[in-house]
Structures are given as structure tokens and as C-alpha cells.
Image (cartoon, helix red, strand yellow):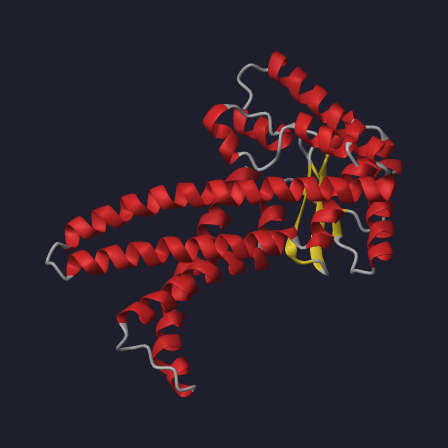
Length: 295
């Protein structure tokens, strides 16, 4: 039932974001901006842009601010505060060591139940973040490989990848909202409001898909950067070995479980094909290994 709670919280968070922004943006346009001599109330284009910026960046940054809470709510996870086993000591000690080396606040360290050998980092800033690893990662990888994966995640934290992706998502959201509002206004002025509304919905879907392709491309670029960071910390051989171990697991899982969720496999290995490759958040394993070997 943990996943149902996570979905409910995700829906509730999005509703809360929309309600909050719907209440605060009019105050911004009608009260706060005029106090500073900026009055956009009679300027339709500027007013629309303010709305688009508020919804585009507001939603993205509110989601980022609560990303740790949402991740914990959607996963069956527990925090490591005092390591109770050798595996926990490896995880906690590695994150602590790298954080001290980088002179940043140590991220929260969590373990979650999942057979997939995976890990992730999230949080609003490099000094307010969390790193989580799956039980599958611990059971399928050697200690040095686990350390390499943790260094990869710490690379995301230190490089500010979560913040950078949020900024890009905010820009894309703003563009989508603004174009949709512009189309609705143009057709409303021609007494074709319903047609404009329908076209704006279609346009939002199409532009959102194109924006997702750009965001996924950016995400794949950041994965190469995190791999390079891991190679710098523990050597490229450890990270290459970890990637190969994960790839072997994915291949074995696909053979043993033909109904396995293809999306989950794509997220771990990046081994999608055709059009779906454009929506992969991770590059193919072969490409990542080749990039590491060139270092």
C-alpha cells in the first residue's frame, strides 16, 4: 500500500501547488508588483507572462523543495543514522567521506526495499539533499562497486543537477503555459473560445512532449558528468565494473521476467530503443562505459 500512499501524496501535492499559485499570482499581479512600480494589469501579454512564469517555475521549485519528502513517502525506506551492519557502514561511511572531501553538508542516507540494483539522489540543494540505495544494489554489487555508485550520486548532489534540471523544467513549463494562454486569448478575441481551448490543450500536449525530450537529453548529459565524478573519486574501473554488474542484472531480469516493467528497466540501464530512446533519462550502458574508458 506504500505506492498508493505515494500516488495520493503526489496528487495532493500537485493540487496544493495549483491552488497556492492560483491564490498568490493575483496578489502578485494586483498588489505586490504595483507596490514596486510595475503594473502589468492592463498589459495582456505581460500579465500572461507573469502567470506563465509563476506556474512554470513555481510548480517546478515547489516540487524540488519537497522532493525528499515525496521520495520517502513513495518508497519503503528507512534512514541510516547509526550503521548497524557492514553494508550500512559502507553506505554511510562512503557518503560521509565524500561529503567531507567536498566540504558540503552530509546528505541524509536511506535504504529502500527493491530488487532493482538502483540508487538516486534528490533534494533542493547540495547542502540539503538525500542519497538512497536499494537493497537490490547491495545484494548484486561488490563493495567497491557500491562505493562507485554512491560517488556517482554524490556527483549529482555536488554538481547541482537537481537544481539545474528544475530550472530547465521551469523554463519549459513557462513556455508551454504561455503558448497555451496566447492561443486561447487569440481565439477568444475572435469569439471562438471553445476552438481556442481545444487547440491549446492539443498544443500543450505536443509542446510538453517536445520539452520532455529536451529535459531527458539534459538528464543523460548529467549522467555522464556524474560518472566522471565517480571515476575521479574511486577510479574509472570501479564505476565501469558497477555498470556492467547492473547491466548483467537487467539482462537476466528481462529473461526471467518477460512481463517486467520496461520503463523500470529503461530507467536503470538506458537500454531503450527507437522513439522511446528520446525519453530515456539515462544513456545506454555501453555509451557510459565507453565514455569512462576514454577518461
